[in-house]
Image (cartoon, rainbow, N blue to C red; front, side, top):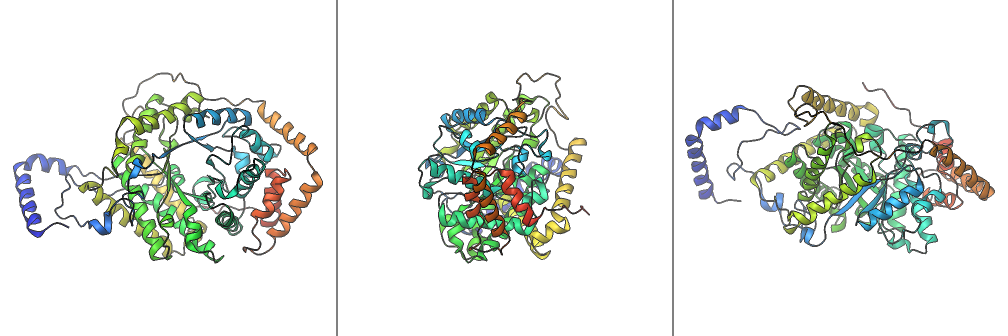
Length: 559
């Protein structure tokens, strides 16, 4: 806080400054300016009228409420981890790509094709035309073993985009690590396992909400008890952003989902500090509205720490410290003047680094054309290296901390998020919000406003609605082999011919029997899923067994 005599002198000086520059200031302030999400912006920020309390709102790095990051020395302790979302349509090609990425210091974050994400084998009618198109098929433990052939899965961090079938992917990671002789207590990796956002922004759900929450809870509980170094859930605000939501809704919806999962796990009577240290968040780091993007991460850490401590009684700093993986938004990349996507990625990386996050993933310049080319993937990794080693950003903890503008905007952003979270609680919570269509309706409204701003030129997208240049993009993205689907189906048939099918049937029967029991620690479904995976049961067979018990989710209309 500032002394009263200083504030009085400052106020007088500011008035004199305004008078000296009256015409210029009046003209500038006549142009109403706000953040993309509607928070009004002043022309100038000073301590005058600033309601920020240093100890309550800002504090020191590495100390509660972690607004300035959760390490006292910031990136001097260790840089953020580059994490590239990648996966070709063939397991062996993905294996070669991952080996190159690991050589470049990158964490592989496995992209799964759509049939895998939705629990179908490649020979299912719903998989027709989609096998290997949006990522790598992982139909069984055999495919996982090919993808990570020659890679010590117990020695590196492996991330996967697995949600409705997250327990099956976890089981593959566990069984392959056991086969390599790794100690499970040291196994590092992550799942998305955030099923609630699938119902509202992405659509890759399988089962109804209640059994899906049970599977999420089973995975979190299993990891808390058996895989202490594993992150069993990545709560995804970024998917709300990609679907069109503004940043306030991106953060509020993600935190509301996270607290819903916490409430479910607490029903199993697990101590709060045992499992929340395994939570982390996937958010978007974008180039639009750069400063609001930075304060988004600062405000989010603060809300998480205060809520975990105040509402849930968490005391372990590892629970209170919010971990964030931020990916640049693919929806903001353009086909027009696609090389400029490198600039967009660079700015997005800077926003994430200045926001003090732990993992950064960038999109590629060619992603809008299809699965990225290998050169584009490595360029995206190299972009992070430029920011990390050529800018000096990592040299100081929270370099924007103390800025009158940044601190004021952080506080206002926090207030807006808390208001939205309160609105969700008053309507009965996240599940009620899903059932009523509230989340989808809000996202649609945000997306409409943003698109309208682009159409009317209030929001500029270079190369699209301004500074257009007619040119051809020369870098060609990866093209899946049209014959790959046939090969995947034949590999699946060969697997079924060579495995112990009697054992597979037994494990699937055990899984169905357990799924029919009430949700509880004693009936944790991860255990029978691991046994089914060990027997080389397929993704489609395991998810099919659960479908037979749980049924499938039917999406309600948006009102």
